[in-house]
Image (cartoon, rainbow, N blue to C red):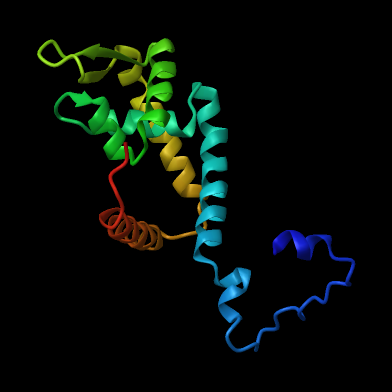
Length: 172
């Protein structure tokens, strides 16, 4: 059916563009798309981070891995890291390998269970903490939001993420 339509020589009659008052179609306006607002905000904030992290030789995902490891009070497995960052194994493994090659962390197999891989920061990984804290402070200072607005936005997004993760299969 789609092929027949695509091959037809008949002129295409386009529906009129959506106007602000169109009943039933208002939810199709770009301004009403939560996904677009989240995508644009993510892109813009990550761009600010990128500019500040590049001099440290870090990417934004590497920044998040470092933070996840710094906040741990006990050893961190690859599985724990993956779950904490809500990333799948295919994304976390190459990221951690690159960070290991850069000397920021090391991986080791659990002696009792070789399926488990531990991730530990090296001295070089720990040494970046103060500089990364300064990056975060610079990013927050560049955002056109108050501390209260940032906290409210973060809380709303965390609630959204938690609700959506509760309804989805676990990441692998």
